[in-house]
Every structure is written in structure tokens, then in C-alpha cells.
Length: 145
Image (cartoon, rainbow, N blue to C red):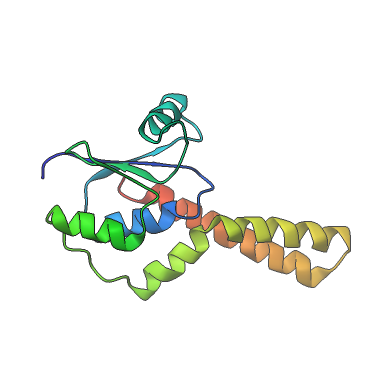
């Protein structure tokens, strides 16, 4: 099938990194658009989803859509389009963990508690989690899409 898939997501949606990872493993051509920073994109997602800003929302070249699909649903759709979805490697699984918004949140909480209560172990744990989250986010930005 010719044409790109459009993936609408949000910077803090925990399902966006796994969906991007699946699209990458299928070598599907896609554009990622964050509705957090793009008002017209947010309006388009709301139009697709009856007024809800539900993400991830995918628009396929044939104009069909999937909103908040399970990874199995998305895999089926990609395979129906002729894509072969490769198995996830250990490195990809680790990177997905780093990209989780939860890692960023826990890092900020641990760092704040460590500084507030002068607890070096919490400060260190928070710093490590924040650095991990930053590395995960940088990996998302460096992807080919």
C-alpha cells in the first residue's frame, strides 16, 4: 500500500512509544504528530474520535483509522497491509521502558523527595531515573521519523 501512516500521539501517553516501536519493527512508513504541540492535529483527532482527543490515533493511507489499538490489533492491520512485523529485541524492550512517562514521573518524585529530606539515596535514584527518561526521549527524537 502506497502512502504514509499518520500517528497522532501525546508526549505523555504511555501507549505511544510501544506503537511507534511496533511501526518501526514493521518498517512502516509513518509520520508522528504530537497533539500536545499542534492544535490543528488535536482538532483532527477530535474530529476522528467524536470529540475525544484519544491517542494514539492512526490514520492509514486508505483513510481507515485505529484509535487506542491494542498491539495485537495494530499488528493485524499492519500484516493485512503487507508488513512483516519483526520480533522485539531485548534492546528495544529496554528502550521502551526508558521512554515511559512513568520513569520521568518517578524520577522527578524521587529527586524532589531526596532533595527535600536530604536523602542521598533518593536523590541519586531520582537523578538516575531522570537521566534514563531523557535518554529514552532522545532516542525517540533520533528515530528516522
